[in-house]
Length: 575
Picture 1 (cartoon, rainbow, N blue to C red):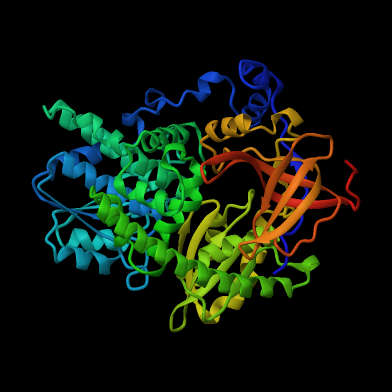
Picture 2: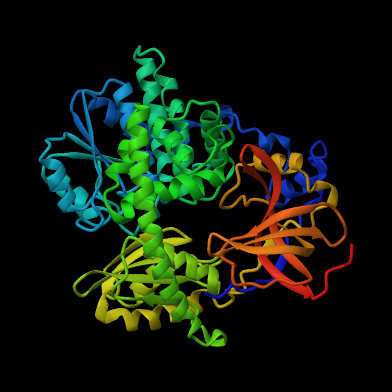
């Protein structure tokens, strides 16, 4: 496997007035925050009081009316098979049960049998349980036929979703989605679980007004679920989302997280008392997602619902085993996809790369698309066979190319080419006939060039410049870890600089472990470059890196997480 492709480095330029407004902070932190749009220390106040008002989310009042009217009737929550959907489902079930709803259950479509969302088929399955109300979480805005089927059966539907709407909306009894046209909510970047939280918070207030003491505080007890789903769904961490994530992380650190999250952290080797958003994104989220990718997400939901630590541990171990299986499948698919891309002429890569193999697992193609995108720095669609004659595709994009809008343009220009699609700016899903794959490849490239003629496929690494030598300390590494939450739209600090490499070895088959020291002087540090084991590093190199805290056998030390290595010269300066 080849090493990561070298990318140009562009330093983020902070606003000078913003840096001045943050003068009370460490100067490096002030520069980092200013380059991410922070305009004063008040922007770093992540207390719940700073959340966008619950009542300002359009549709939430109608949703509360509908839910409250059905508190004594059977309600079924229709979830999604990813981490956002699982956390949304667990959050709503936990809250409705705490509010005293008489009958609450959930149903998650098996992606291989029913596909995504509230389809007519899944409505028929739900109808066998006799619900009066269906509540969708993290899906539903495109479920026109499914809502119509529910209406025909006399079942009301509440849609809570965050995906971008199409040209038509389902005729639901109520709908809450910050991305509906004409909306003015301050944080349209809410994940599905964020939308569910706002609905539950408004419902809690209604119950409080009706004399249920403490109901308004119930949803906040499950902010760890909100944080996990928000980070795992890779939605932009605007200030509102950062508040939700920080509050959820604080609950886990204080030992108040749900048993399932604590168990998943433990099995991933992470310390809940110092958990950060990256732990949710790279340790907990993938283990939860694995169930929906390969089997049935109900395993993950049950893990998040149980309050029995022993049961949570059992389910977390099961999820860990499924995730190991997922990793093996992904590794094989990734190597095949990389071989396909590497065989292309690098100078003539199509503007949108499509990869497909009939033997690929449809639950894993999204991960493969993301890996290939990292490799070739342009939008990628990875396909697997959904059933005879039909392909299931997962798309991942790059900044500046709105992938859902691109798919809509393809569909509009070629009616019937894409059977169905949906998603966000950076990720989307679609289905098409296998015989139309060649036509899709040509049309998606044509539409991309038409819509985004100035798309920059260099995808430079944006860094925060050089890190002063006196900042390569454990204390500053801890400060950076705690200065988040970091994530999409509010990236973890990335620095670059020249280093002398003194030692190197391969660990874990694919990772390069090094001992390095800044060329300008300073301490010798551990550094690790994931998935770059084939590299042979000599002399002085330029590293793009993150400064992290490494914990080994209870001892903490600063460590560089290396994103890119560029050779500068072949001699190591003498000591």
